Image 1 (spheres, rainbow, N blue to C red):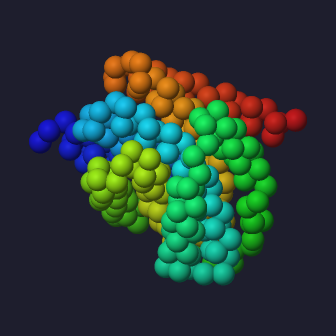
Image 2: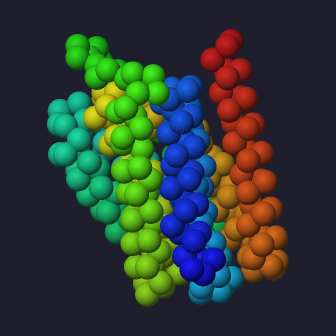
Length: 263
């Protein structure tokens, strides 16, 4: 097994495992915050850089940055649709909204600074657009460390691996910009939100999605750093620096949010 295939098969499922455990320990808001970190798009962009070259991946990262706008559309669409429909209907609706957003954004090619401004503005506004949480009369039971949790976790990880393999395989023949958009396919959203809604109810799913909005600031920072660094630095150094930059933004955003809630 080559290293790129191993990256696709094992890294993302392992990260889904870690985020799922974090959600069980600290709640869906924290799980959403963690899942917005580039745990899926990062490995996909790295695989693209190793397979297609640094310039290709740098352009793809610019597309991935713009695709944050599409993932905001996905999150809001699911949050509102889940108030009327179950997972089986709300998820296809949200994915269709994501696809329409990607189709529209494909025709827009702003300069990188303007793209960053658009994404940051959208992330500041998006949390206010989520629906209010509603009383849920029959909340599914969640036995701590129970059989149900242990039974579904392998399915979450398998779903993540299948989605990443599918997206990265399709991306190779679609050009760098569309490859970048596909790297932002809502893998974590589809897997984590769907399972969370089924097991813990709509409120938990909406909390998870709202939590991702805070995490996407770090995601945007990661994409910006990759887009800039790959054209001048080796791949390992570029992704390492981008990860550190994103982690710094992630921690600063979390600290700022905690301070704001405390006042």
